[in-house]
Length: 64
Image 1 (spheres, rainbow, N blue to C red):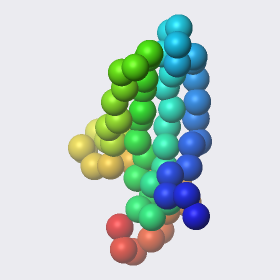
Image 2: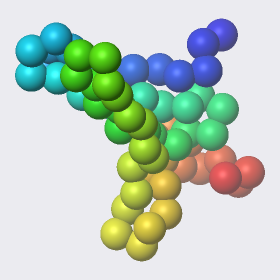
Image 3: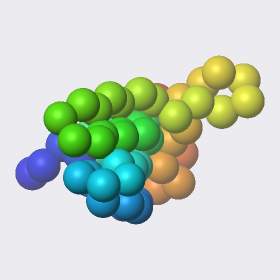
């Protein structure tokens, strides 16, 4: 099983840059990944309270 699942993709890596939202399938945390050319970065998405954004199918998980 792959740990990360891509749920959103926009752009083109070589021209304007590519943005993706990935979900960690073990924790449900969503990450924003952006790259352009040979550079890129990843960061967790945070809500207004500074807590990680969870994919809706993981929100009822008592372990999180």
